[in-house]
Image (cartoon, rainbow, N blue to C red; front, side, top):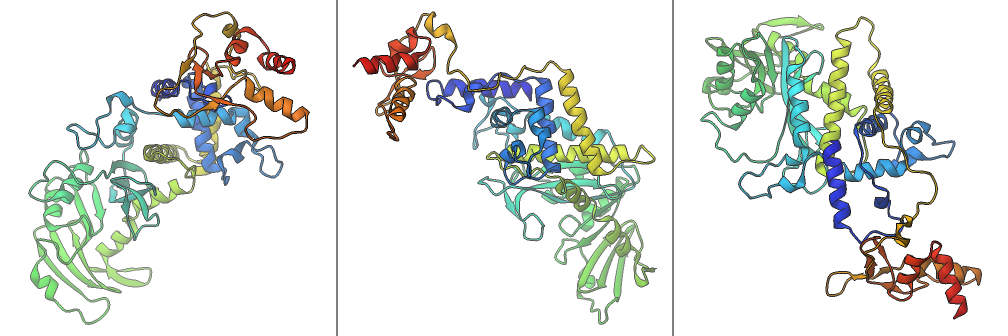
Length: 476
């Protein structure tokens, strides 16, 4: 993150050479390092704990809305600079869409894959696991964004998740990026998706719960052979579902009709609506649960199907609501929140009296800031109005005026005559929106816009160039 952020920051400054305003925030950019990046991530996590309507409100000094933690950790302009230049991969290696070798998740870099690898390898889940879709909020223009009317978050990026049904720990997180280029197997895309999510979990005695989007007789039988039993609702038109089961009429609520073949049982159940259930784990016999008689497989499905929803809800409680223009930043911040949640679940399982989720995040923020202070952080720039350029403009060579490229380049305000004439007019009680001439010439060495005559010479020969211009103006 540090390396790519510094690379992208330098690239953007090179592209904007000679085009930055006098007091542009980008002029304050200097390379970041590990300590400062840790503080940046701490602030991002803290923003999920403290909600403000605008990002700048976190640095407000008003007594009603003041949150001194943020200003004491990092200045507002520095945080916004890091947010602007934050990057995870080298753009020079990006392969455009519709080109061979294009990776839709390229912008997430190796950080994304490394985090997901840790998700799958550092936690031993309970027996019950579930597969479902999660959503990352996003309303921008993106080729693989989706609309899910049945989800609490209806617009965004869809992710297929495998979660522990007991704790809500996320084991696998596969972001949907549109139609696959490679051809699916003979059993279909959804079959391949579930098999991929369960890779590494076969033969460990897990019970999988899934809804009717994933389940099929073929999938359940193959999972049973691989050592994973399953329970799930099923669509009526799913291939392999017996016609006799579909045509059977159920007159009363609570009626069931069951058909079995080997370890697989299919059940038609009259609940509020007609529901089809497939199971290779629990029987379809009726049991009493909460003073109601229901099939055992239905009771277990209702109890353990919500692993993904549980995970999504706990992440949403502390989600960063910061508006960003890049979809991959939204995904990264969601993954960051999911990483913190997984860390809390692991911590909670190893202590007798654990702290709350909120307390855990607060403690994490404090330790990240403390660790950032221990690292070799970059000293913050001195407070006050920054100087436009260092004094080497008075002694260094290679100062030559250059015109902006293009047929009709946009003129910019001169750094000398614009503020000088503004002060002169203010002393006379006059106000003008554009008090001086604009220019298309700049000094490449100093990266400032200057009128060729007389401002270019004044700027490079006087320490207080505004005062020098005012003196020359009064003599005229």
